[in-house]
Structures are given as structure tokens and as C-alpha cells.
Length: 99
Length: 195
View 1 (cartoon, chains in turn orange, yellow):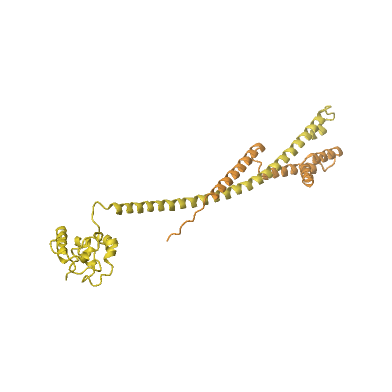
View 2 (cartoon, chains in turn blue, green):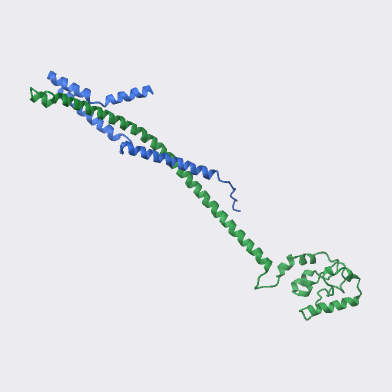
């Protein structure tokens, strides 16, 4: 559980753009020629984030809608299990073979 | 921020701080949204598993429906055939109004036909069944007993009238013969035993 939380925190830090912005500001203060390089890094990071988001499953609807869909699916499974159980508990009779 | 640092030597007092704070706030919101997106991804995986389960249940239910329909068809056919059988039995009991007399086959398979098939020890020159085949009604009504002689075969009354007929003198039999002849629809002799 703790490991999962740590992994999640690391992932959220990875998608933060602040470190890159900080590097850019530092280069600007130093008047370093690496400013453009840092800007390119930021741009790439933003593009990477866009692609990552577009590939994420389940984000086509809001969390509330998704929870509703999940509840509906669970109810469907429950109802169908009940129906099958009802059919299976009916009295059994042998089907006579056609002579 | 770049424009602020390059173009303006004296930025306004709190503007850079505001911009920085805005940046930090946006970054925090972005991270929170990414967390929500990841949670939605997990929920989506669970939903996919549930959808697979629903598909499997649907398949099971369809299979059961198919079997139930087949069973219903078989039962309906059996019930229909049973009803037809009952109707035919009922009709056999009441008789067919179009043909109010028994057929040859029905007579042979009835009690009288079975009695006629009993061994007669040479009383009759030929099997009683031939009499039935000839279609002469009085012969059908006349039982053939092993102790009967060929002379008295025609004049015998039904068995419940007792066993005395075997001891009666021939004269009586002649009277019975007349009665049978009166009952007979055939103009010729009703006896089928004489050859």
C-alpha cells in the first residue's frame, strides 16, 4: 500500500512542469545560451503530457458519470447472476430422446 | 516571465510573484487532474472486467432460453399427442356415428373373437373365424363351446343361460334354432358349421 502511494507520488512529480520552468528561469538569469535548449525541453514535456492524456483509458467521461456506469454494470451482473441461479434451481426433467 | 525579465528592467512590484503563484497553482491543478485520470483508468479496467462477465452471463442466458424453448416444444407436442390419443379412446368407446357396427378387426380382437379362437375339438368343420369373415351376424352371437355337437351349435343361447343345454333333448334345440332363425337377417341357414 505504501509502495503504491510512493509510486503514485513519483508519477505526479514526473508530470510537474515546475522543475523545467525553474531551469529556464535559472538559465535566463545567467544569460546562458542553454535557454533555448531548456525551452525545447519544456515544449517536449508538454507534448508528451498531451499524448499521455490522449492514450489514457476511461477519461472520455467525467468521474461522476463513470461511477454511474460502474454502478449500472455491477447491478447488471448481479441481476443476471440471480436470473441464472433461478433457472438452475428449477426442477430438472429428462428430455426424451427422439426414437 | 521571459518578456518581463528581458523587456522590463523594473517589473511591477508584485507581478512576478503573482505570475509565479499562478504557475504553481496551475501545476498543482494539473497534477491533481492527472491523479484523477489515473484513478479513472483503474475504474475503466474494472468496468472492462464487468463487461466481460456480463457478456458471459448473456451467453449463458441465451443458451438456457434456447433449451427452454426446445423443452416447451417437446412438451407441447407430447400434450397434443396425448389429447389426440384420449380423443381416439373416447371415440372408440362411444363408437363412430358414421359406422355404428363393429368392424371385422374389432370383433376378432374383442372377447368373443378370443373365445372363438379357443380349441373346439372338432366341433366345427372349420374355424369359427370363417363364420365371422362371412359376415353373418347370428354366427357372431352364437358362442361355440367345446362340448357342443354339430347338431346343436346353432340353437345355443348365450352362456349365462346355464350349462343345461348340453343335456337338453334335441327337440328343445329345434325350438331354439327357430328363434335364432327368426333373429337372423340371413335368409339361408344361419349355421356355419355344416359342410
